[in-house]
Amino acid sequence: MERRDFLKTTAMAAGGLFALKNAHATAWTAAGNTMPYGPLGRTGVQVSKLGIGAAQLGRDNVNGAQVVEIIAKAIDHGINYVDTAPNYPGDNLGESERRLGPALKGKRDQVFLVTKTESASYAGTMELLEQSLRNLQTDHVDLVHLHNLGMASRWPDLDKAFSSDGAMGALRDARDQGKVRFIGASGHVHPSRFHYAIDSGEIDVFMHAVNYVNQHTYDFEHKVWARALDKNIGLVAMKVFGGGPYTFRFPPEDYEIALRYALSLKGLSTAVIGINQMAYLEQLLETFPRLEALDEDEFIAVAQRGLELIKEQPKLKAAHGLPIA
Image (cartoon, rainbow, N blue to C red):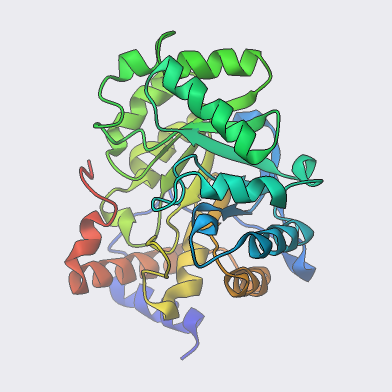
């Protein structure tokens, strides 16, 4: 049975079990292998519908020459959004940024470059930013996220973090100095914490773990994104395939389902896809142009599929950690 037919059949079986009225549907056009672009929320910057997640580009199974080739091919195919962080990858801190620097030489003006801060303090954030600029071999980055704002151990006092003495104070000053263009917040856990960020009025972009399985647990799509849209905050998806250090966590046969779900979310600007091999990038570039946005029946079917996977693998309930509220 064709995947599209399977989805429609499952949707009928689900009997309208899920009301996903806030989560569908964003159409896109990728005809002729042309990469579509759209505004990143109130930043107004036009970003590609697909972005490159560079965490894995710093691992030992990748070398610098491969990173240069991967980034060049992504840019050649219209991808202009590149996401990294000073602690990527976890086993070799900073190597992702250090490899991206040479890969972006001569191409810096073709990408919207994103990094992060893991420090809640003013001094710590300034230090990390200067380190990132050196590693990335640039005088500015386009966006800096407060990295995993839902992690209370990293961000124990949000009032302090958003004060003039905290991370936000540093990012405001860096923005005034031309080292940062926009400020964002990323997260895998604790969706309720992100309402503080919305209320601050200072966050331009959110990047959250959203996928067809974790819509039933973390559900950033409804718990946070529905309100963020009203504030015209740019919305970026990560963990589209479930995450994991190297491999596709969800069943490989669900590759297109996972990708279509994320790309169809209302208000989505870009979906960041982790890449650590040229073959993965080629698969993405080959698949993307022939995908279509999910219709209402398909959203229901995909939701049912996500529930089935949670039943089969209960660990997926909290795949990225706790809390999920």
